[in-house]
Length: 192
Image 1 (tube, rainbow, N blue to C red):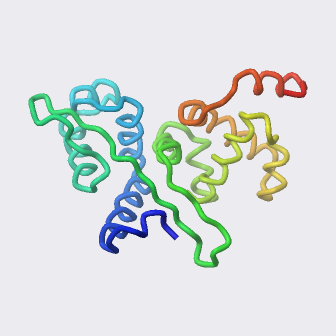
Image 2: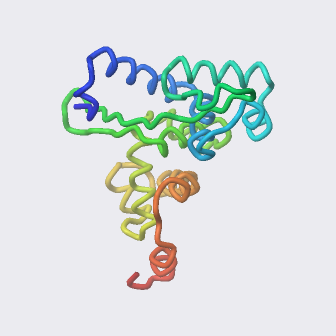
């Protein structure tokens, strides 16, 4: 059940459709993740930092504003844009798993265009599989699991587990609090 269930049904459906659009279009996910990292930015910032053509940058920004996941924070020129926080949990039809759509997941999907390992993983396991892998990646960076444990739990090869964990490492470090001392101790076989 979505944590946004106190809202009107129309708002819940619009929120879900907006997030689904982000997860289906890596370019939009990449832009959303960029705006979330920057707190707010202008279209010129987007063009420069993401190397987008002016028309493309305006088109993507407008789509995110129309979808309700980005707001105009300053109407003065140049306009500034910022993300709205996404708070959406999706439960499978069987009710055995729930996935929370987070900025980290959206960021990981956005990296699909530039990271072949993430792209391949999504092709094989879907966005829900990527959400699960992201959970394991955060746990690994905290020294709580290994790639072999993930491989056994998810019935994938240890090689595939290691590839996706390495691909998701920058996302985890950007979005999750990781105690570097614990990670360093774990890598050296310490008790951390």
